[in-house]
Image 1 (cartoon, rainbow, N blue to C red):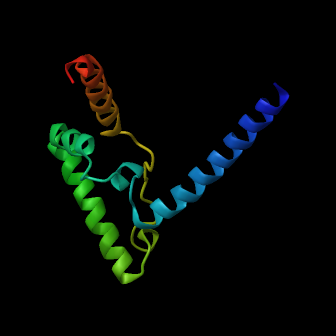
Image 2 (tube, one colour; image 1 turned 90 degrees about the vertical axis):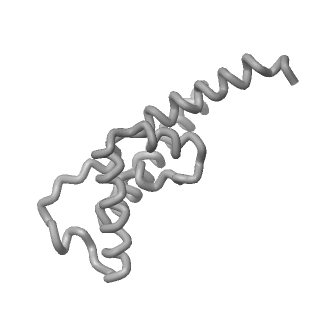
Length: 114
C-alpha cells in the first residue's frame, strides 16, 4: 500500500515536470497540444471534419506559424511577448475520445458476427 502511494506521487511529480517541459516547447512556436495529434488517424480526421470551421482555421494557422518560426529559428515570444497561449485547451480531443468509444462499442456489439 505504501509503495503504491509512493509510486503514484513519483508518477504525478514526473507528469507535472513533463507537462511543464512540453508546455515550454509548445509555447516556443505557439502550438497547442492538440495540434500535435496525427491527422491521418481515423478518429482525429473525423473529429476535425466535425469541428467548427473556426477551430480548423485556427489550428491550420498555428501549424503554419510554427513551421515558419521553426524555419526562421525564431520564437513566438520574439514577435508577440504578451500573447496569452492556452497550451492544453481541449477543443477536438473530447470528440476524438467519443469517436473512439463509439467505435469500440460498435466493435463489441458486432463481435459475434465474425
